[in-house]
Length: 454
Image 1 (cartoon, one colour):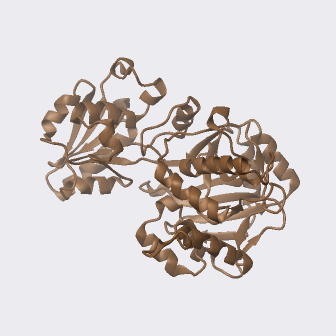
Image 2 (cartoon, helix red, strand yellow; image 1 turned 60 degrees about the vertical axis):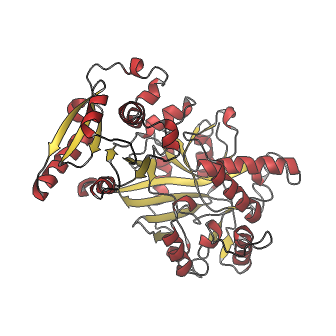
Image 3 (cartoon, rainbow, N blue to C red; image 1 turned 30 degrees about the horizontal axis):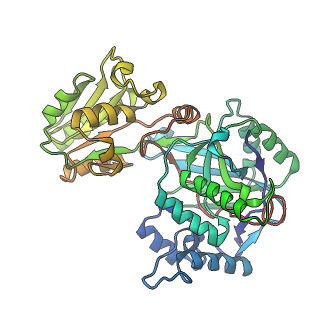
């Protein structure tokens, strides 16, 4: 199914630059403050390509996209970026602490590999999505790709390898000292090993040949690659099955890896007319029982919060649960009522979707309990998002939100099952952590795979 190829990546010359000074987080995770920091770090920082500054006097001839292309060409010409001499598969390890996890199990090492994969239409049923995309990010990314003819960021793909055959091969490589290593903004250590050995490459390609791929992160970038492929096909020129535009650079992770971490994204609700917490609890009573964790001072609050978090993570009395905080001196746990027939409560929702806590939140709590419509959620009219539970709670304490809803993370297998079934998850359901750095490997989308570009 999945057609994997080694390629000749362009990579920063570590004799000329320090990797920590030039690599960036993915473009969609770069805040204005991060952008400023990256620009200040080095004149060769990838920010000038990945997410450059727009200027008031930009023109069609001189703009963020033309400047990105110019920088990339200059860095290649000056040897700041150098192309590997032979095609390789790149083993990629990330050593990280799980945000909010107890110290005993906070550290993990996520191990995958970077390679090219053939870009496939979704109806070929080789590559599957789990999110819908928006037009604006795709318009930005394809304009950048047209000008730079390069993929600097990684597509994060999941594959199914329950026997861990590929991971075993990756672990052999990762026991050696890494030729490239750096720490990032969030304390994650990134290590990279280019592997040119033909037998290793053949082994990985053979194991991947029957795999289906699910996009974990990078839906906009993947659809940009699809659109670019179609443009290049229509324009003619370099063509055929090995044309570089037929491929995209991807990082592949095993769904069954014990180090695959998905963080929850909590919801904070504001602007609901005549919000009354007691009335809200009554509205959701047909579907949820509620349990309170009251407190009257700081010491009691800390104790109540610890008990609340424990019960939320463990699912109260073995039932799926959602945390709720609206101030008023108590945390709440809404536990799905025993014997509730979800098929009857949500008849238009698939069984796989009904297994998601975020679906219960949106359909049974936001819609039925607060009359917050799906349209309002998409428009972010009443609902905003926070990664950190403490931040979602603080928004209520500051009076910036009326109520916060605190979630457990979705399981990777749930993401895969829904994607393979042709479904998508609600907006902001998954946060794969940590993110894949941009610029570790760069794929120049020109020529033919196996030749100068790949």
